[in-house]
Length: 330
Image (cartoon, rainbow, N blue to C red; front, side):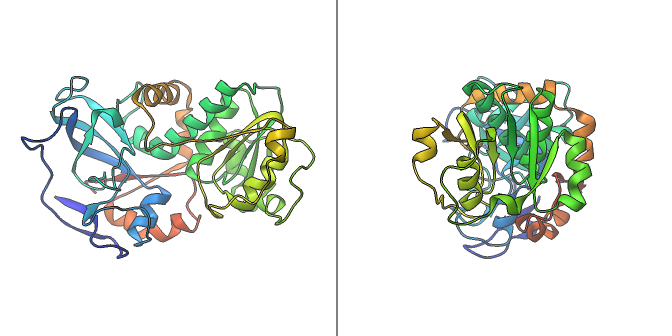
């Protein structure tokens, strides 16, 4: 079968022919073999295809942290042959075969059934980015900030997670402020998704800023990290919540404990790789019922396997808008 493979540590991935995986006699209960129809392109996939360190833990390995397809063989009590399933994370493309191939494997704990009314292409368009956005929105709603409590800041707004987060938050009635460095080119797009205000990312990038600033945000969804997240925390209102999911600016967090002590701010994370099955099902149920599919189509492009390779540098540099579906048969 054709697949995009990371051949060795810190070497660029390549589109090549490999033997399809199977289920062996010694495979553990819960393992599932999947005929893949679609995957999606994420930042982690792009970094892996460029040979960046820190993502793949065994080589050679098929890339792709997402997969949508049909169960071919199952050792699971939850999934049977013919079930349409969605895979996000769970080690795919990191230490077990990923979704940039026509066949892959997964453990049942990382799978959900394809939710109605989504097609395989739409589920792939949502992918890990949309799943992560849903986890962030659920964290906000579970923690207490409600529509009308104040503005919700979304950083890295034109990316995949940011785009879906804006759509979901606006659908639930939140007033969303979209932070981006591409306001002139993407402002109309972000407003269509539901952003009420566009904020230039430079306004959150000040280094060595005061650890407590004027209160503004009821909640924050952050994919940038570093000084941007530090400034967002400094501006979060009493009792507010910040959900971190990425580190586009850096993994450091140059702040103090003051926002947490004096304003009772909470900082949590959205982990799409290790999310337990009940949380996965809850997030995908929300995506299936609440995400506007016309908006999803507006933020989505489709490519084949070679096209995914070609876009690796673009997504790592933050130049890809919204979501990219990968048709593994194209």
